[in-house]
Image (cartoon, rainbow, N blue to C red; front, top):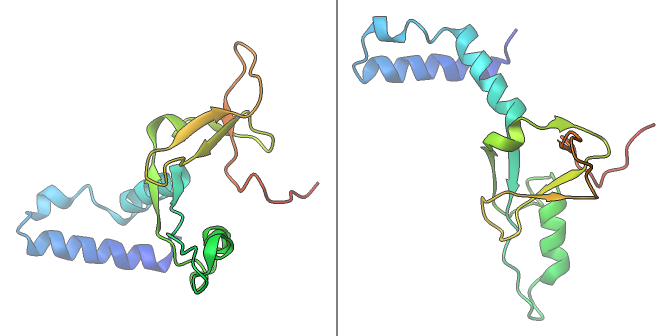
Length: 140
């Protein structure tokens, strides 16, 4: 069963396309099942694109520590920095590892993902990334 919000979004999309004059025959492919399968693929292959908010070094600004807290917090009231979600073709093919040999980051505080070896990688070894926060404590 799809999430209720996906059903609502699907209905809204169909209504907008119909209102824009698309004939019913051209929308036959856009079933709820097809729509949910596409969203699921996007969700599974999407990466969070974090942007560190600008910070004020002055006495009234929160400074670097506040900017760092905003960056790592999942609480929207704390995390005021912009972030988004994007699909990157190459990293979408990487499998998960709790001990990944490749790291992903956004060095220049923009949408460009950088892939870097986290350790020496043997020839022929599969490249793996982590699908979760690599810095979080994992359960054994």
